[in-house]
Image: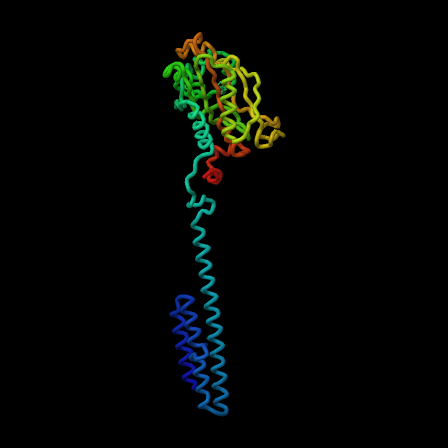
Length: 340
Ligand code: PHE
């Protein structure tokens, strides 16, 4: 009997050394400790014995049973720990701060608003024009009735390039070229990215988008300007938009205005986005100065026109309730993903 017990102990030790995973370990447990397992068999064979021998053999078998139980329990714990270590070490290979791979592409909110406004103006007979971001002094200033040393240049903290060209500070920089290209009558919008050397905060950026529009024809008046702006804004916001016109000065319009809309983020009560005024400056505009028409090759005695410089970035903030202008250029995919 003693031999049998020793043989089983050795057999178990060997079998255990070949166990590779939790499934095999469980099989081993059943094989030895199960109701019809090897240890149960051994217990059965006690019946062949009697007296002191039986008692001793019984104690040996019980000792082996305890040993097997204990060993299997420790082996299971070791396996669990190894599994956990593997997971933890595996996780270290990933940068958990990376954006998830499953992100789908989305349009930038400014692109979305731009398309919307383009669509509205196209249905009103405007064409959509493109113009470079790098321009010359003539188009950005001179042709807009802003001669050298004119104080209005100070308003536009310009980024100059080494070759004398500059990053366009406003989409008005395209007015002259478009007038020359098409002549009058003319209805065109030209969206574009603009740059100004400004310090950045929740409502100022050095890089922002505008959409310029000009309409030139016989007998164009301020009434036409107001009509087009109100129609467009009410379409964009799908509600009747409150606007106000304040006098504004720009050398290329006469008269010139600032068109404000009531802040849609705070409902006019005042918040950081509207500098607590309840109004957002959205769209400087005015009647095109006769000299600008002239420089564009259009006879100011025959034609008049209006121009506006819609702040597309501002418009996107209002449209989507974005409180901080810096979010637009942050490159944060989690911001953009909201606009899929
Ligand atoms: N270009 C002007 C600016 O950005 C805005 C403007 C456009 C004003 C058209 C009047 C007419 O400051």
